[in-house]
Image 1 (cartoon, rainbow, N blue to C red):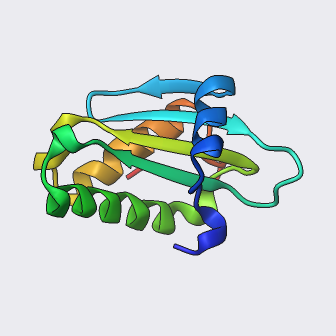
Image 2: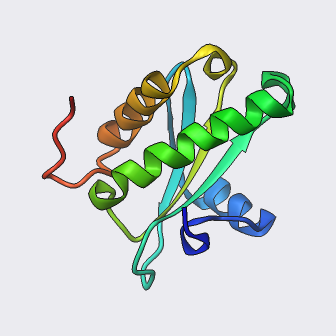
Image 3: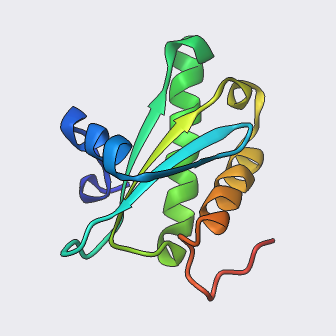
Length: 118
């Protein structure tokens, strides 16, 4: 995923937490806020140390980045989106994480109308 699509700074994460909306399912929590003047969406990922060791956390982040890359054309912009992984994601495969992410994005109307859920 290109750097312009990532949220890296702590201040940007905190702004989304404070001013944005949130929604959750058992595996993931999503915080999002609209950013007028931005011509793309940006994502930030958070996987806490309670979830597992570095290998496990990095695998989850890699799965989430890959899912966003595949959904890139369907996500509405301009939004900043922060995804927080919950403990159940450590035992999930890629397809399950992607399905959970799609569920959150769909419920919060962050996917464009042309998206067909499989």
